[in-house]
Length: 221
Image (cartoon, rainbow, N blue to C red):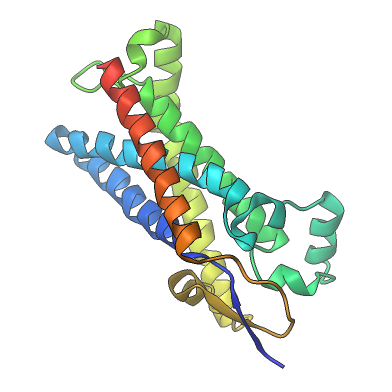
């Protein structure tokens, strides 16, 4: 019997697609340079706000959005790779998918952090570059422009490739649940909470994170 499960709550879906838009904005504005760098910084602040929100939401959000639902032991990951996965692994993030999620969040956080203290010595400097040593600024700038960007693009390509693999090889549409929120499963599992109260809480958390980032930038300026 097929069961309809609310896997991704609305706040998680909004986070996901907002991050996609902001990431595209970061890459595009970085390539354009010049006046577009103002939008590069704005996109970076937006990404930082989103990441802070996701960290908190990973602790208090819907069941399948919480980190506890997709932190797996090495033995579980190995068993999944060998084809001995559990039914619930097909609901939220799988043991392999979880690694991609944590890598993406971690490297995005590292990218925006290094951007905050970078300085191209031409016209653009991160708001916190004035508070760290020249050595830190130099390393952060090198990582931000030469390493971090390429790592993230590689992770995005891997993520998209996995989506195509699941769609064509396993006949699983991973995109539709991230749009509509629901997934059809063969097992009766609990849904993520996604009501008006949880959505209001998510909005309050995100606004708090955005205010924190905005305050940091203002104080630094």
